[in-house]
Amino acid sequence: MKAVKVLVLTGYGLNCDRETAHAFEQAGAVVRRVHINALIEKSAALAGYQMLVFGGGFSWADDHGAGVIQAVRLKTHLGAEVRRFIADGNLIFGICNGFQTLVNFGLLPGFEMALGPDGAAVERCAALTVNDCGNFRDEWVKLRFNPQSPCIFTRDMTLIDLPVRHGEGKFFAQETVLQRLAAGNQVVARYAAPDGSAAAGRFPYNPNGSLDDIAGICDPSGRVFGLMPHPEAYNHWTNHPDWHAERQAALRRGRKWGSGMPPGIRMLHNAVQYLQAR
Figure 1: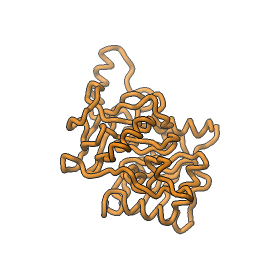
Figure 2 (figure 1 turned 90 degrees about the horizontal axis):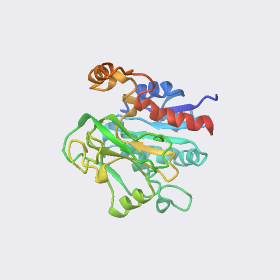
Figure 3 (figure 1 turned 90 degrees about the vertical axis):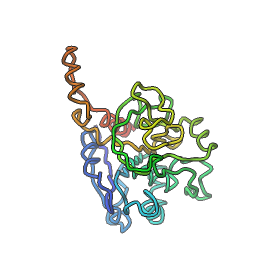
Figure 4 (figure 1 turned 45 degrees about the horizontal axis):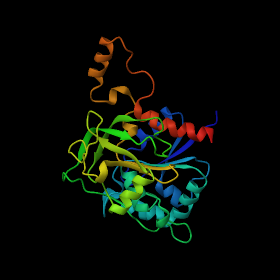
């Protein structure tokens, strides 16, 4: 089975790179953490990798808005290279601050209307902005995935718990953009209530006030994916705050607990399997 090489970006306030690298290694990938300056200065390159991961944290301290400076810096220096990387069939995953970066970069939603004559994404048509509650949220939420979505990462996944930790997670766009996202099944993940029903904007099930309960979207190909919750933070069954109660409940029913990949790793494993089979 061929190795899948994943580049996890780091530097200037990103603080989830080690956790993200660890999670992708658990999912079966070969991972290297690379500083953004190494790519810009050409001492490292995207060539040879099959996935680029924009991880969580607070790039440039979220100055001028979360993910804004990182997106401008990358688009200015590496825009064409990143677009070639996508055109070659590779994957890009943005988690939390990474999702914010992809939206600011213009790689998400990735509509044709957002493409210039040279194929460059030049128009930002969505935003991830300040939580409606007015403060930082650090909690676990429930997500429901769209089974019709082309997203590579969420195949055969329906309903899972993941943690959020952000102050600017509200997905906002014009109604026409929301309609186009829904029509193209580009809304990959929505916040849900504890029973799995729609959060319907209710706090804290929807922790930030995202329109249409949107927690994650992909581009039309399903190969560029942005998600506000952190799958890399569910890399062991005991990461879940209710793990002890869940284990005891399983034992009382005579069921095995804690076997197989935790949901966060399974999401990453879907991407690794796709690249191995490509």
